[in-house]
Amino acid sequence: MAARVGVVVVHYKNWDVTRRCVASVQASTYKNFGTQVVDNDKINRGFAGGANVGIRAVLQDSAVDYVLVLNNDAQLEPPALTEMMKTPQETGAGMVAPVVRRVSNNAIESMGLRINSARLGFNRRSASDGQLLCPTGAAALYSRKLIEDVSRDGKFFDEDFFMYGEDTDVGLQARALGYQCVLAEKAVVFHEGSASASNTSAPMYLGHRNNVWYIAKNISKKYWYQWPAIVAGQVASLAWLSARGDGKIIWKAKYDALKGLPKIWRKRSKVFSYKEL
Image (cartoon, rainbow, N blue to C red; front, side, top):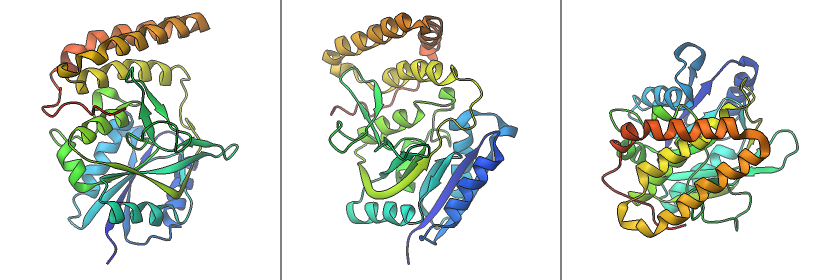
């Protein structure tokens, strides 16, 4: 029998968008799954907190071996889950990234996430665009075992992140534990992108705050030689975005990141550092 998948859809504000997402899941050619929709309008815990609620719910079914986490503005092509599930069964990977395309123009938005030498995270837009770290949170498949190994106090994603960067944080922890991520090249997921967002500055603020936090949580002191590049990356982003007119947002993000470091530092993993880039 095919492995059972728990599908978690995190709803926020726009039910029409969420209904399209759920309908695309229901149309999947892969049939052994259950779906949990989390109403984030009510719990208001960001994507990280909402996803954690859904993950705990689907894992109550002991038959669930994998969890597919979706933004509510994602839509699966019918074969997508089938193609994603082929990958861990063939390779043993604990994480699977699909090919994410934009609804508006069919352009590739992501083929998973990568990090550069400054430990800044980016979407991969081709198979040669840097080494694959992990899936993007828009559509990510994880094994139950990986979720259990990474989770702390019943929480898979770090809820202090709220949203943005929580997927990279999880990816760094999972890779440090020895888990691999594989791209399912034939699995296509369409993404509307911030379809439920009302504050256009939030992605920039949260992304740059949380970038500091996932670096602090996941980079071992023994890789001290990486820190000059990391610091240079932070300074360059501050300078570039300030020159572009976004100085108020980016400086607040970095200031709040530094204020939150003591709490984040206490979460540092006992198994440190995905070293490869």
